[in-house]
Amino acid sequence: MLGSVTQTQFNLAALQSLGTPIPLGVRAATTWQDLAGFAPSLAGITAGGFMVAFIVSGLLAHWLRDLRLPLHVLAGATALITAFVIMNQLFGITAVAATRSLAGLLALGVCGAVGGWVFARISRRGARKGT
View 1: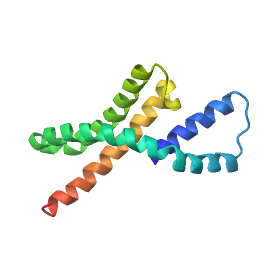
View 2: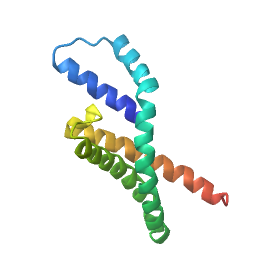
View 3: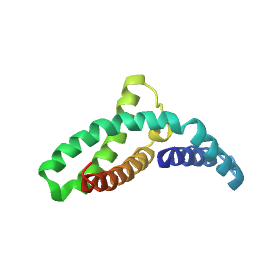
């Protein structure tokens, strides 16, 4: 969800930079529409990247227990940035508009880092319960 909202705000900012007025109501409505329409696609991209990244960070965290949280955070950021760079190279177009700029790509990487932090917190709780 955070990535979808970020993507939407980057797109709206690009339109504003061209002189298009974007009132707060339009901004909110567009964000909600993108959460319904774009977020599921982004969730698929994110899930694929996270699956690989968190397996790797989980294996590393097994040996580097004190670095567990930063490993998962880094894995989340790396997963999204890598997924978008690969998609951009494979398709020859920018499939996710926010990744046209370095700022947008890094912002989505931060969203991935937040996902890594959430994963580390949730998976740690499950490990403590013996699951």
